[in-house]
Every structure is written in C-alpha cells, then in structure tokens.
Amino acid sequence: MEKGENTPGEQGEACSACGAGEAKHEPEATFAAVRARMKNVKHKIAIMSGKGGVGKTTVSVNLALALANKGYKVGLLDADVTAPNVAKMLGIANPELFATPAGLFPPEAKGVKVISMAFLADENQAIIWRGPVIMGVIEQFLSDIVWGELDYLLIDLPPGTGDEALSIMQLIPDLDGIITVTTPQEVAVLDTRRSIDMARVMRIPVIGVIENMSGFACPSCGEVTEIFRSGGGEKVAEELGVPLLGSIPIDPRIAEAGDSGEPFIATHEGAAKEAFEAIVEKVEEAVKKRAAEKERELSSLFKE
Image 1 (cartoon, rainbow, N blue to C red):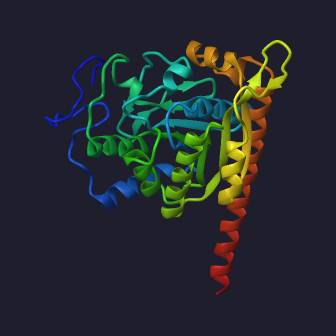
Image 2 (tube, rainbow, N blue to C red):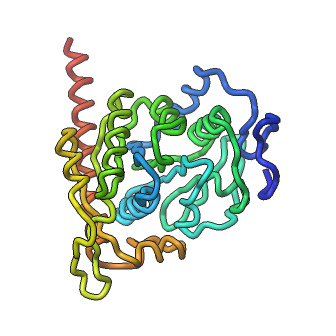
C-alpha cells in the first residue's frame, strides 16, 4: 500500500503490504505462524495503560533504548494501529521495507528493530478500520515480520483493554507479562486497575506498574518537586499485590526529545534517565525470575 492511498475498510480491499482486508488465516495456522516467529524471541513484554495521555509510548521507546544500551537485541512492535507514534519518537521516516518470501524485515533505529503502521500509511491519513481488520494487522505483525533472534520484544499497546490487547494476549501464550503505565492522578490509577484485571483474567503475569509524570525534575539542578499528587502508582501496586517498577518524574526534555526523534534516554542525563535505568533492572530481574519458575515447573513435570 502506497502512503496516502485509501485504507482498506468497509469495502474489504486488500493491502498488498500488510495484508489487511485479506481473508483471515485459519486460527490454527495463525497460532503456528506466530509461534514460529516468536520462538527466537526470549522475552515478550506488552506495555499497557488504562487510559491515554499517560506517556505509555514514551515509556516504551525509552525502555527499548535502555535495554539496547545494555547490549540486548531488542524489537519494538507498535500495536497502536490507528494512532502509531513509535516511528516519530525514534526518528524513523519513510524507511525502506524489505519484503521477501521469508517475510517483511523491520527497519532498525538506534539499535532497536521496529514495526509500525506508520510505515504503511501517510501520517495525516486517518486509519478507519473496524476491530477485525485491526486484529488482522496485529496477527500479521506477529506472524509475517522477520524479527530474527531477539532478547526482548516490547509491544506498545493502545490505551484500554480492547481488541489489540486481547489479540496480543491470545496470540502469544508465553508472554512474559505486562507492564502498565499510569500517572499519579486517581482517574489514571482507576483505569490501571482495569488493565491489571484484564491481564489476570487472561492469565498473563503482571511484571509491574510504572508511575509516569511523578513530580517535576528541574532540568537545571535536577531537584524533583511534587507539583501534582504522587504515589498513585505505589498505591495501586500495593493494593493489587504487584510490583512498583519505578516512578519517572516530569522533565520537559522528555517531550522535546520524543518530538525530535531522539529519545530522551539516548541524549540526556538526570533523574528521569536514572529512573528508566532502574526500571530496566527490575524488568530484567522479573523476567529472570519468571524463567526460573518455568524451568522449575518443567522439571517437576518430568519428575512426575
């Protein structure tokens, strides 16, 4: 599909690049194709938020870079099909996509492999698709993209508990878990509870909660000032028995960095960068712990 063309939708037109609008694969074939792609990905983590505007994509992009900076092979899947922003935040514009019989190879930016609907549609073009078509795109992102060997695949989900989140949780049964992003405000914390409840209903582990925009970090002196209430993330984590992975203060440079396509963690120092790095350490600990638990479960099965 060339940028600027009408998106497939009500008429069921097929998209030659991503396949949206084409007849769906049989469920068994889809699951098999996803398993084949995902077998070389050690850790799969979905990043959610109960509501929009909490900085979830900013968190996803900076966590991906923080992992890549530690030497890991990282992929980032932008699963927000109708409002994709990952490419903009990573400074990827008009990438050359390589389609082969083996699948589509994702472009790479700053050490992170990326796939996004932004590569297939004009940035000013509204993507007006119903849920089944969006789910078809998610399926193809998981089954047709040649990720290769990865240590981490982060999946940036759209806000809420809709089709995209459901598709990811159903298609990747060995998902390491979800991370949910909130702000300190009670309305955001309320919706975070819903995200965690969805994960539990789907039997997906909850790696933890990140409280974003927690206090204001002065770009000059680095001092953090509580200009809004804080502790909402800590409160919901304690209430629901899940880890608080960290609190990221407001830093004006974070938004500026995202708009410029140079993620904050790649170009700046300060309290916010330290917070991202500390969160990555906790994520590493969580996935190692889960891997050890799975190994013990397998060992016990063999003993029986």
